[in-house]
Amino acid sequence: MDFMKKIIPIIFSLIVSNTLLAQTDAICIYEITKNKINIEINEKDNSTTRKAKNLINEAIEIAETFTYTLKFNENESIFSKNRSMGNEAQSSYIIPIAEAIVGKGIYYQNKVKNENIQQVQGSIGLFLIKGSFLTDWEFTNETKKIGKYNCYKAIKKCNSCDTAEEVWFTPEIAAPFGPLGYSGLPGLILEIKKKTLTLRLASIDFKPKNIVIKKPTKGKVVGIDEFKKITDDFRSQMKQ
Image 1: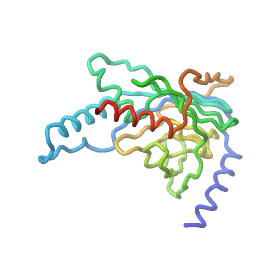
Image 2: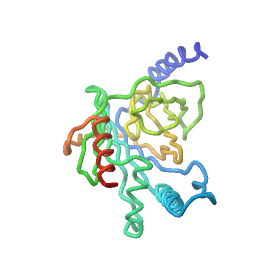
Image 3: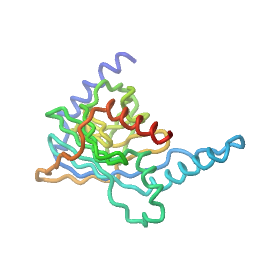
Image 4: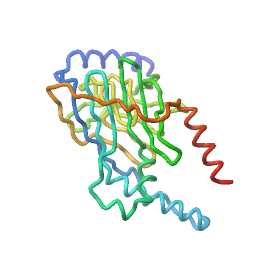
């Protein structure tokens, strides 16, 4: 196993260096699928817990209607939710919950400047959460095909990361970007598996000209830990 973990990055480099997909600019569409059945409501659950579980189950159903777009060029990428075609007015109070389950806001990445920024609008204001490219990925020897691309499984384990259980990337598209701020792998991330949902590439359209990426600049600049403290303090105040 140790040998495989050492040799896999070398294999990735060889694949990337010989890939036929030389394009560096593309527009990707990602879709949502539910991983398992709804959160089970137990007989011992009180009315408040039952309502909360029903709300989450409804939010997951709505999240399955979402689509997202990832645009990238040689150095930058941006990821965001597409405008829904459905009647959002009927479930407007559920939509923010559904978005939070997947991942809220706009995600910007710049590999040259080692920037990883999430722009989030919430009840306490507009924020720019600044981080860096993710590192310390744990590679596995598991492979599968997503569409026509050969993909490899990687796992990210850290306290400050999102709640993804695993990601699948392809060295056949030599772009170190991905949805939801995930990055730093030797190939484009095509799938992210979370506890309840999976975000998977539905289509990719390569572009012959440089795609212009607009970096989000509005909002209070904070780090991940600072943003978590601000939101925790706000929740504490609301409970009082």
